[in-house]
Image 1 (cartoon, rainbow, N blue to C red):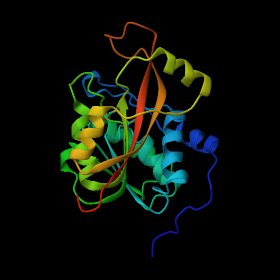
Image 2 (spheres, rainbow, N blue to C red):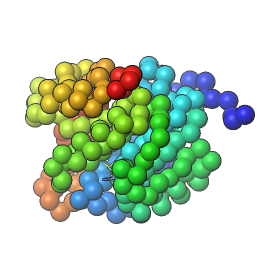
Image 3 (cartoon, rainbow, N blue to C red):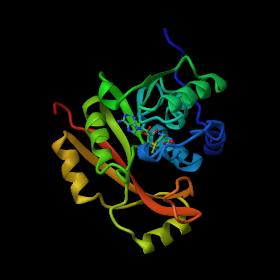
Length: 234
Ligand SMILES: C[S@@+](CC[C@H](N)C(=O)[O-])C[C@H]1O[C@@H](n2cnc3c(N)ncnc32)[C@H](O)[C@@H]1O
């Protein structure tokens, strides 16, 4: 028999503290869009999946494009039964392995260094912060297709389709997630791949200047968290 699932509610502040210990990419690569998710966004995403939707505790979880393991290790910390993290970048996986040792979660997480297409099987939940397609057009689509092939519930981050100053203002005031409508394109795409969108939340993302082509000290933009369910039998 495995260890009992973690049922005690973990405070969001403790989860953020835990996530802050996960080392980011030492040398991020622009062509792979290796932006690390902030502790606060990762914590909100994990909290929603774990405590509002019961998709983490005691469940099998997959992190597609795991980077150095922030979402994967966060899921393990909250009490996932097992977690698989996959990333095409060897150095990211190496850091993820180190992170799982320093956080004492190595026995719960399996790391795969390879393309997401290598992943087979079935998972209760897929968490993903894919490349948004800024460097390679539509890079996030293959992630959605794979997530819907292997996952029952999918939590997937995407670029907000428009630059919406009013929404940015509201997000700054709320300091959290705001529910918005799905993009017509993604709604159709998800449906074509056997899923149904349950909710979409807009989130304010801020990234520091990381790459030569960044012209500002920090870049602020809106991303959308899609909560998707696989339709049975599809
Ligand atoms: C935006 S980063 C997200 C990293 C991490 N999940 C996080 O949220 O902090 C996207 C990750 O996807 C990985 N990636 C890009 N294309 C991939 C592919 N085809 N297969 C597997 N991983 C891929 C990149 O190396 C990168 O680590």
